Length: 177
Image 1 (cartoon, rainbow, N blue to C red):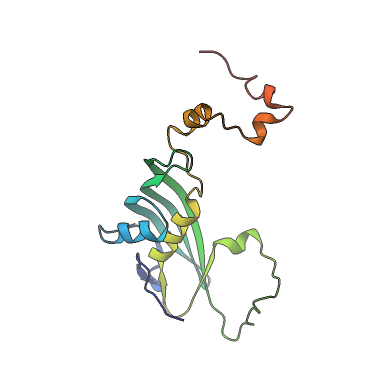
Image 2 (image 1 turned 30 degrees about the vertical axis):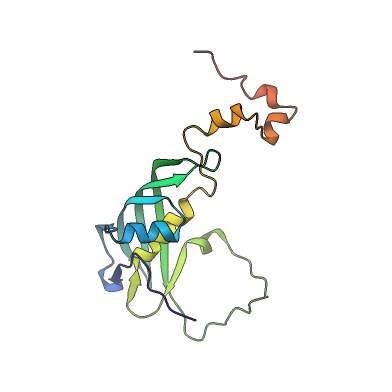
């Protein structure tokens, strides 16, 4: 299997997990590469403000990521820009030697904490790749641009919720302006 270098790699020595604030910013060359990887029309900026703290053998990254992205509306197929701001928290744990290998067809059960754990070997962790993966998870798979509702109304497109017996209650709490 070919080992491809990540587009946004920022290796940090685990001994530098001192709780100090750090900022990681994607360069002008890294943004288009990440946009292509994640199927975006464009990525104008990606900035993460984080702290890295040691907790026993684990390293915990907490902070926020902010990205200026351009997506294609899933309704109108028009490009639109938006700003994505997400809190992130990832726990990096050392990969245990001799840990049992997962058999591909074996069913495993994951807990909520398992989703934000990355494993590392050696004395460096790739904060950049963790930030990029956090961006990917935060992206809406069916982005809706500013004209999506109007386009749906013009095309008389409805959702299952619009046709339910409770649809009349949807606007009950709204006041006329």
